[in-house]
Image 1: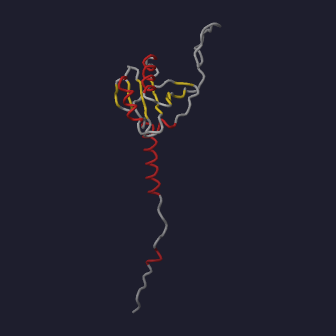
Image 2: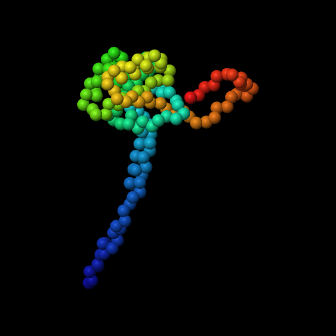
Image 3: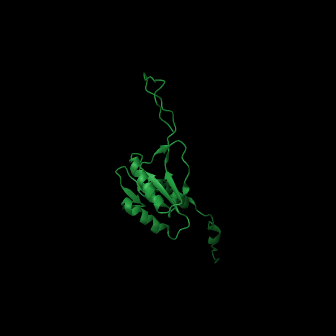
Length: 160
């Protein structure tokens, strides 16, 4: 009687199955694509729209000092609601051990101009070296007047 020889080692597949890994990575990619736009620092405001905004990528850093002015005359330092009179002292406290004395201001486009100027004065009084005013990019596209509209030669035009 002969012994049956089993050669199970020859049937083992050493190929890596990457399909489950690719599925997991695609799901993670979709999750990050959906969540990333929601990661706005500070208080959300409708910032002024300009044609040529200057890139201030330092405002997105975790330790950036953000001051926000809302349309209903509220002032936020980061996410904390503060009185404009207390803003100077709070900024001074944050700037004591920092070499980068830069603050970024986000003002709502419908906020009162005088209120924004007062907040800027309070920020400057704290000893800020640089104050960045954050804006949004204006959407590109030509605005066409409605049909039948006429223009007058001396009428003021909008723009920057």
